[in-house]
Amino acid sequence: MMQFMLYSLLFIFSITFMQMIHPLAMGLLLLIQTLLICLMTGLIAKSFWFSYILFLIFLGGMLVLFIYVTSLASNEMF
Image (cartoon, rainbow, N blue to C red; front, side, top):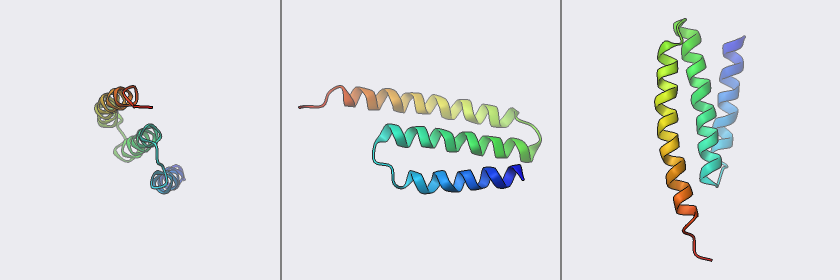
């Protein structure tokens, strides 16, 4: 039952991701999807160690992306 709920949430977030326009909202949704995938792999493997490492690596990449987008947003011409 828990896996079905995670799969349905992942499906809903995947559909919502295609309708996003702003990069920060897309990044947040991508982070939520990664968290859901890590939860699913942790439940399947019965060990959350690999899921934890995967999430931390992806979170580091998302922080780099966030810094890049915010540096671009501060240089917009009005």
